[in-house]
Every structure is written in C-alpha cells, then in structure tokens.
Amino acid sequence: MQLIFIGTGSAFTTENFQSNTVVRRNGKNLLIDAGGDIRWSLKKYNMSHRDVDAVYVTHLHSDHTGGLEYLAFASYFDPSTEEKIQLIANNELICDLWSSTLQGGLRSIQGKRTTLVDFFDVSAVRKNGRFTWEDIEFRIVQSVHIMDGFAIVPSFGLMFTCPETGKVVFHTGDTQFNPNQIVDFYRMADLIVHDCETCAGRTGVHARYDELVTLPAEIKRKMVFTHYQDNVLKDIEAWEKKSMDDGFGTFGDIRGFLRPGTFFDTTVAWPREQ
Image (cartoon, rainbow, N blue to C red; front, side):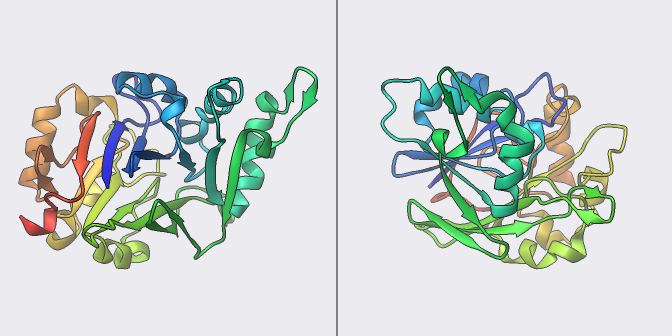
C-alpha cells in the first residue's frame, strides 16, 4: 500500500493544491476527498480521472468536494470509461452531498434528469461503520469540525490498516483540537495524518500547530501535517526544522510537514520504528 499526497494545502491555498490524498493498492487508487483543484493536482502527478477508482468524502466543504463535479462529468462522457468511480461516504453525508452540493451542476444533462447514481457507484457507511477496499479495512471516525447551531455537522476521518504490515493510519480529515475526544485514536495509530492550521488568524475549526505541539511526545512522533496554509511552503525548511525540534514525525524524507507530491510506501519506515 502506498500513500501519495497530491495536495497538502488548506481551503485558501494558492501555492499548493487542496488536501487530496491517494491510497494506492494493487494498482488502483482511492482518493480521500476531491477538492476543487483536483484536476490540476492529478495532472501534476501524471494522473487523470481515469486513474481514480474510488473517492472517500470526509465532509461537504468545497475544498473536499469541489472536484467531484469534474470527476463525475469527465468519467460520464469519457467513452473509454468502463466502470463508474466508487463514491464512499457516511450515509448522512451522501444525502446532503447530492441535495446541497452537487445536484445544481449535475442533475441535468441534455435529454436526461440524473441522480448521484448515474455518475458514481455509491457506497453508504453508517456511523461506527467500516468498509473494505482492495483488502484494506477502513473505519470511519467522526470528528468535531464545525457546529451548526447546537448540532455537529457530519465530518468523518478514516482509520485504516496496511495489509502488508498491520500498521494503522489515522487520517483525521478536518477536526478541531479535541485531544480528549480522539486520544484513543491517536494511540491506536502508527501514523497520524493531521490537518494543521498555520495562519496567523484563528478560524476555530482546525487544530492549530501551537495546540498540537502540546500533545504528549509519544503521539507527536507519529504525527505529520497536511491542510496547512501557504506560509509553510514559502518557508518549508524552517517549518520542517521547527516540527523536528518540537518532536513531530520524521521518517524518510518526511519532516513533520507533508510536501506536495510526497510518496510514502507503507511497507518501509514508520515513525514508531525510528
């Protein structure tokens, strides 16, 4: 199993692509989210819609779903496409994904009224549920990202196991800093791919670097960062040195912050082993 980080930027990035992670297994690719610039990140790393076999959606923000319309139309009208892209998400999310996010652009094509299943092979996963893709078992993990009044807006990261080694990856998706809520998942994981806010202004909906640095050392050394702002790429070596000094994950060429295009073979080195 390989992880390819074809986008590691936040919603507002202009120096990097929005968060898009590829899980590769048996020559097939599962995207974790599809931000609005997915067609460009795929192209940069020599892929296209034809290389996307499945997409898992963590939540409905545009930097995680804005590229789904492109994937839908590109595969639908491509005569060489033999199978629909599998779309996987929590069952609550799937309903809102069509009604609130996608149907404005996708519901009508010339001569036909369409639904989500015209474009994707849809798989719904309930809370506390799991799914299997290419022999990898994924568990969905709810996070607290944003509130809608007094209710939590559905947002689900992923916990999954490398078939070759049994090592566990926790991909948070988007989450606030809630260590008491997810410390058990931190401890279960061998690698934590965490969203990390680095801008001066606080949005209140992401874990910030200055918060994550307060975590215990045994958790920090398993943690690497994605979904950061442009200020990191503008001074990446300084941020990498800072993250190393602060005890965050360093293994192979990865030093805390995931550079765009990072390729990680999960059969090689893990933070816990170094």
